[in-house]
Length: 335
Image (cartoon, rainbow, N blue to C red; front, side, top):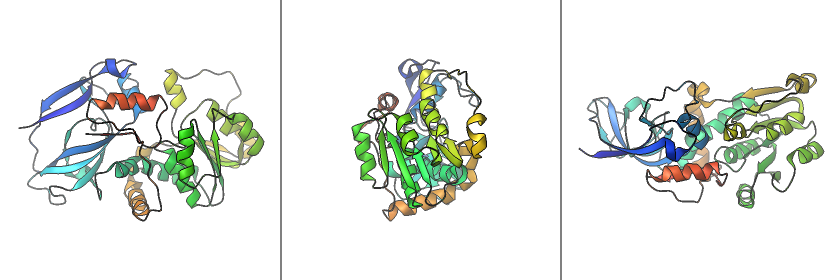
């Protein structure tokens, strides 16, 4: 029987290196309804991971040692006797909290998602691309020819959001923070205005060029970004919160003394909404199929960060890299 190297949370800490360790165990035998998968690539979700190893995700009961990671793609190397919808060699995707950061996965066959190839691009589409698609459809309710502003637009989520928005012939405002990210966004050929927030003041630009003109805002940063988006919403505008990067980076929520949010949006009939991917699970298959077809037809570009990370041990470095704001596209680790 082979062994399985895994990255696990072994204690709570603010530092991933203090909180985690490498654990090697024997591979368990699979049951008649299970499959054994060799993971090829895992996706890095550093902000969510950090809340886990800080012990701050309220709906997860972390018991040490806790394997973490959410998304992976790989190939089936063994199937149970009653599994008839998969075969050895099939490429599959998995999206499940507490499963990804390991070399091999044993899972029930009905938890596996068939994909054309076990590549970083399909890892990016599922679930990150799915989040972009469903967030725009269900929460932003984006309509053709509207104006949308997207924070962290060169990230794994953001670079899909801006492309899907342009497919609706929208005016797309993309915000990023480095020259490399500007270059990535330019290569997508879908952004009408790119704002590098380290070169231009977000509040000034939006208040000057887009005052009361933002129909939809897609924000995963928070604080100053949220405030600038909120101030410049159009009548019936929608501000979608898809993440809280700044708050999480600071370790606690900023306490403010100001009028409540409705003071800013009531007279506009605008709204602030939140997106959580797992609440739309019934729509995931349809979204995946649409995005897979677009990618295969080259109607959708999928950008993977060019920095190479390899092996279970590299997950820690990849996480630190993403938290440092260096990523362009989806950060993945090859196993």
